[in-house]
Amino acid sequence: MAVTSVLGFAYWWVAARYFPPDAVGLASAATSTMMLLSSFCMLGLGTLLLTEIPRNKGQEGALISTALLLVGNVGFLVGIIFSLLAPLISPALRPIGATIQNILLFAASISITAMTVIIDQAVIGLLKGELQFYRNTIFSLVKLVALYLVGLWLTDKIGMTIYATWTLGNIISSLPLLILALWKGRHKLGSLSPRWQVLRKLGSSAIQHHIFNLILQAPTQILPVLVTVLLSPTMNAWFYVASMIANFIFAVAASLTTVLHATNAAQRATLSQKTRLTVGIATITGIITSGTLFLTANLVLSFFGPNYAEQAAWPLRILALGAFPLIIKNHHIAIRRIKDEVTNAMLPIISGSVLELVLATLGARLGGLSGLSLGWVIALCVEALFMSPLIFRTIRGIDNTTNTIKQLMILDTKEEIPYEQRVHTNEYIQ
Image (cartoon, rainbow, N blue to C red; front, top):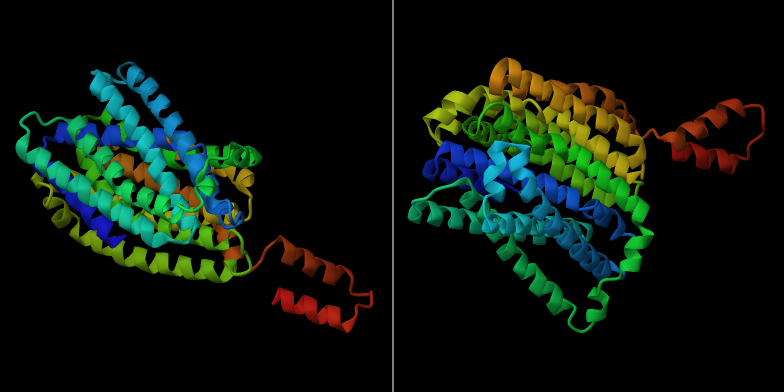
């Protein structure tokens, strides 16, 4: 994660140094739109694979290949439709649908991005996280080198050129994993063949995960688009760099809860112990990193240029504070998924996502970038306040089953219970 974070920092540093701010702002808005639409086209299958791969031994290849084909085709179709509608949605997004080349580029980017997320989630579900690290490292390197060469050689420096390097990086970084999968499965290619009936059995669960993922990701992906539309592409360049740096801090809790979900999907007995560990690590890391960033915001942003340091320092400091409520929110989501309680989590997540966008929009109207950042963090704190009880109960090892046993023991004190059963029950509660 540290390697890809450094490379991501370098990527946007090159963009800020070699491209004008309005091009960087357009590219970041287009990239955020691509990420949001690719999430829409995921159909919930990425998170579903995290849960179902450990539970369906021997069918991993069929699950993964079927998911890849489905999201790839849906992504391309959605990309075509959106690129044609982009000029009508906002003048700032007009370049996405300006030419046939841009339309095809945008559609291919959504398709490929959705497929690479499927790949990343699948290797985590297979407990092969090192493969995700290698792919992400290759992706970061390729797009960084491509952006540097484009910035060095091209005279017409536009936002869609920056955007194209993401697609190139995703394609090249996915090829080694594809070759590895085909090589390992060369003697049993039938196990890699798509089996649509497998996904039919998981239809309702996939829809739940799909809606849940869209609601979760919509606020952070829409924020750069909001800045572009409400303020300007140039201000979005400043905001996007600040949010990218803040995301380095947020990635710690997100990565820990992803692993928590994968390792406890089929084994829930250790959930309390592992939750204590991940919450502790995320909190300590958040204190250190956000505190350091608060003191060095101007220095860090000055690497991108004096305008970035002047305009984005306070938004960055405010965004960094979001690391703490996000620890609660990310763990709340992971625990709900582990317990197959996605439906129960839907209403608070919908309410929280709407609150994030409303307060961010209000903040942008009243206080520009700093106001937008503050509004978003306040919304996160409100969400964390309502989600924290579940985290505390999980850390203490209290769940519905345990509470039921305790209540039965209290209500049944007059009934004689065999000694062996009392010992077994007490051990379970402890």
